[in-house]
Length: 338
Image 1 (tube, rainbow, N blue to C red):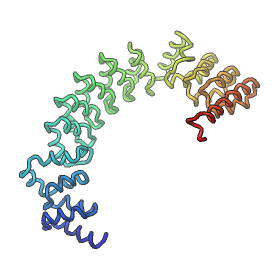
Image 2 (cartoon, rainbow, N blue to C red):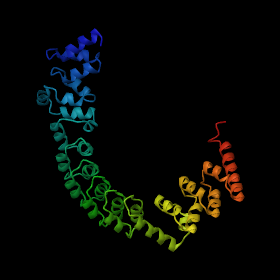
Image 3 (cartoon, one colour):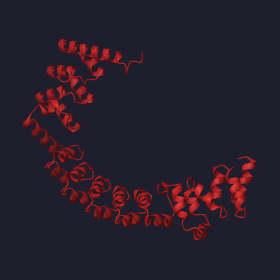
Image 4 (cartoon, helix red, strand yellow):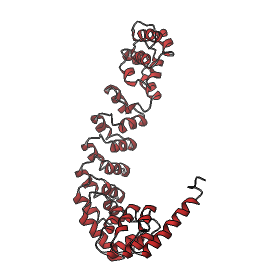
């Protein structure tokens, strides 16, 4: 730091430095000087408002704050106007308490959405009269469990959805939400990885297809239940695993199945992910390897392996497919750099 800046810093730290001098050096100083000015009791209020964006905690700990508030009761509002995202910072409790009781809903929302907000204030805001404020509390991962339980029976559907989505919602609370009459809420419960397995098993048999799908895609659902669901689909129509874009877990199950009819169906499905098709490149059944070679979703690297297949027909088809993919690459205006 230059001697010039050292002198400015000494003045900024000195509580006897006149207000106008602090205003003057505030325009010239670096971050360390601005920091010191934010803490100096002689700093003019308008400079404190300006510095609230950079040093909110220091401004709120300024020794002159009580006097400033006596002269200007609206000072806190002026601070927030200059830094509306301040509640994401760690702030003095008195300021967060003031904001949690603010008449403006947008300010209470900001407090409710911040993970820095103390739990007892989130519990207080969980009973707010405004739906948007309560929803922010329901979304907050720091909200106390008992408050989430309170919001789980809120009359507002969107608030119940937010509770169902919250990864910190208790298993007990999710179990109750699984009985909600609204299928959108049950679907969110089915997708939550905190949902108890027993509840997931129930939701996997829900009357709503969207709820069942969400349960199937939850990694916590038992493999036995997954298998029963897939078997039910196959019993209805085996073309389902041949033609439809299924959940990844279904594709994975089918690719590793002992029944060649199931493996050949998933080898033919154009929605089967490339990494799973690649698994079938080494299948012992030639018809499956041939089907993989004909699948338009097969990767070039997998086709290159199949061009060396022991079966001449498979190797030939793979070579044709690989050549076509390479031609499409080189003559595609979007991909061809030339």
